[in-house]
Length: 116
Length: 114
Image (cartoon, rainbow over all chains, first blue to last red; front, side, top):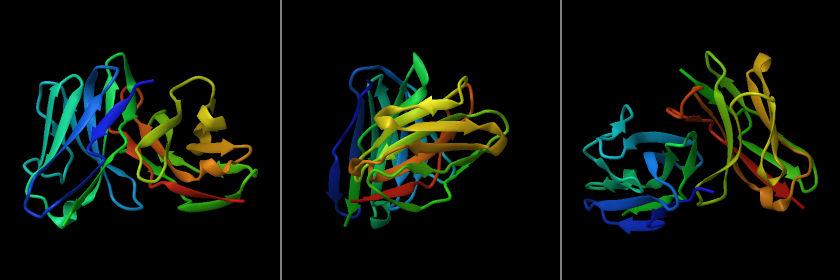
């Protein structure tokens, strides 16, 4: 089956610094990738949709200048949390779809971000 | 706008007992429906999906779900629960014809007791 990886799985950073999270589709080309944020004991909230080679589409209320998304290739999307603050601490999950089977999202294992 | 309701936040069942997790959706037409499972600190794994056709859908790990249009429901079932099934389960809905704007329910945490 289709595999999506995320790196790092856990990251701790200091307030005010930036951190980059990578999402890779390992065995398929991902035409579209999604970034979700999950708060403790809550559901996934879609942050943005990224298509290879174009600007990401952000959901209402998500600061595009704070959460920078780059979908540079068909197998890699990155989420950079800029000037992180403790309230950005969360579980970030990416997912990807391939052009041939665009109805099913394949999820990465998630990245736990803790901002101190 | 589409929405998903999972009325049970937390369910506890004994190992070997049957399980049913409830999911109700709101959408103007027949949506695409999904059930995902999430183990602690992990991403989501697709258990099963419904796009069209047979309303009883078989998934992995012995799970099944039934789409009932009249009740706007897509309940997840398993005849005999194993301790390894303890996890969080999410029902999700997407507009038919595309993947965009998948909406997740708030999840049901399943606890399995010996």
